[in-house]
Image (cartoon, one colour):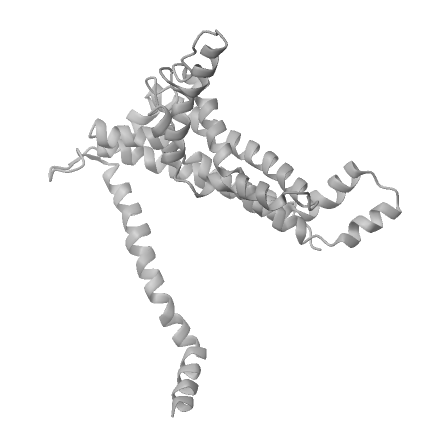
Length: 300
C-alpha cells in the first residue's frame, strides 16, 4: 500500500504542473516581503509623511530634488563608495592571500582558518561595539596602550576622514574570512596537472599565478567581489556602532543617512527617496561588476 502511495506521489511531483505549484509559496513570500515593500517605498518617496501618522501629502518629485541638492547626501555617497570599493578590495586581496597560504597545507591550517573566519559569524553591530572600545578616546584600549608609553591620546573617531577608513578596516577584518573560504574552495578545484605541466616548462611562481591560478579562479573571484561589493555599499551596522555617521554626516553612508531621516527627522518620504537612489546605485554597480567579471572567466 505504501509503495502504491509513494509511486503516485512521485508521479505527481515529476509532472511540470506540480513543479509550478511548488513555486507558489516561494513566490508569495517573495512578493510579500520584497516586491510589496519595494513598491510601497516608491510611493512613499512622493509623499510628505512623518512615518507613522495617517496624514500623507503628495509632493511629487520634491523629495528627490531635496536629495540631489543636499550636500550631506553627496558626502554619504562618497563614503558609501569608499566602504563598498575599499572593503571589496581589501577583503579580496587579504582573503586570497590567506587562501594561498592555507592551500599549501601549512601547520595549524585549521586553527588559522577558524580564527580568520570567526569574525564573520559575529553580528556587525556587536563587532562595531567591540572595535569602539578599542578606538574610544576615554578608556579605549589603543589610547591606554599609548598612555603606557607616555604618548598623547588620540581621538580616533573625531575626524570624519579617519573614521571612514577605520570603518572600512573593521568591515574588512570581519568579512575577509568569507572571501578566504571562497578562494580556498576555488583553489582546491584547480587540477594540479596544470601546475605540473608549467613546472616542466620552467614557469616561475608569478607566471603560474597570473596564467593559471587567476584565470581558473575567476568564478570564485566573481562571486566574492560581487558579494563584498553589495555588502560594502549597503553597510550600516558597523557605522552605527562606531560613529553613528558622525561627526555630523562625515562618516555616514546612504544607509545610515536613511535611518537618520526616517527615525530622527521623521521624514519618511525623504528617506524613501534616498533608499530608491541607493537601490539604483547598488543595482547598476553590481550588475556591471558581474558582467565584467564573468566576461573574464574561462572554461576548464
